[in-house]
Length: 254
Length: 285
Image 1 (cartoon, each protein chain N blue to C red):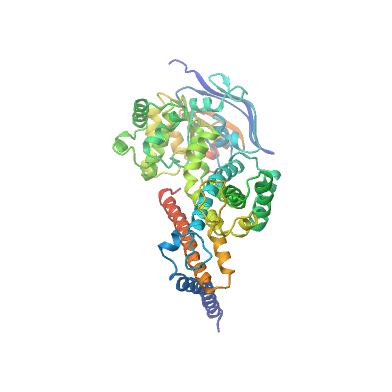
Image 2: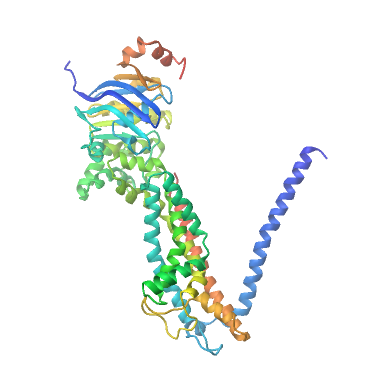
């Protein structure tokens, strides 16, 4: 089997909210076109870490990082990196589905319109392709002009995934994408993640250990701002090296 | 009497007290309305709305007054809306939170509480004298804009605050800039509430008399204004003028003019309520 390229990397990454040291010296390398799961108890820094990859923390007062985050070998915290360009490359899906209060179509093409693309045929094609990719096309193809808020929670989340795919990123960050959904919708999202990994590098934060086991190739366990253990998901779940990891995945704390 | 009986009694007592308090306001308002309508309705007809002012009560009308009020409404909206919304947007979305922001916030709230006649004096000095606009519609509208700016800024900020963080995050995550996020997401989602606030502020401006008297708006204007630089009168000033006259016939005129002013105010408030309801139906977070 050929070795995959390294897509995302963190080098001695520290992050702070004011005086609070949220991430402590994180080093990690993530492969391209694979799914990496971040697990750990609430407040362990996994979401903060996820958000450093598209610099979503930039807007938080008092937040700062040192160390490096590399995307395709390039440090994204360099001054000459434009955040909007970065986010075209690194898409994100949030915990709670957050469709815009607009039509389904307008939701999907929002990112393209932001880039100044106005041609209707281009937008329509991109919308169909993204919705198909997010396994939502069949359900919404007849009501693209209806409000996105009328969709079910699971559909809304898949719409948010389609919206992220429409601007053709290479990385997809998912912050507990199924935690607000019912089991059937969750299963659909997981299936989708499985399909998407053929084309995208996916990083997913999850509280659900079974979910991490089902969808991810690699798992990283965070605790109190530290990366405790990082390994192939199978190895991690069957024979964790660290006691803290074992305690967490067997449900003894967290 | 047991404790729970006593509690229930207190509960009941407060309910009755509350109903009583509500009624005091409503009854006073009701009496006022009935009185005005009885006195004014005899005088209120098409002629009254389309006649110029006159020294003879029976021939006097409110054409110049309500046209002046509409002019003031439109001009004030054009001036205060962009200024107030932009200021509110800046303070809420762009400005850094800190001691300076708190200082600004407190002072904007203070400005909302400054008596309107003070704004009149300010307008007299700046707009009428320094900018040499004279006692014109434009000077009046600028003065009233100053008066309602704090209200518009505060309501704009509240409306923007109500737009959930997740919507902004969604927009930023797709590569949108701050301005694109504000323009495409925040403003459309909050515009109903902002508009409601503006209309309520305007309905206050429509009833203002003191600042306009100070800047020299006249009760007797023999023709309707045709440009923002013309002299003008408005309904409240016309009413004020008529009620200060001894003849009973002028009091009747005043009552009729009050009805006209109330209709304008109710219309504005009605639009505000309609917009708010529509907004609430359309967007549920």
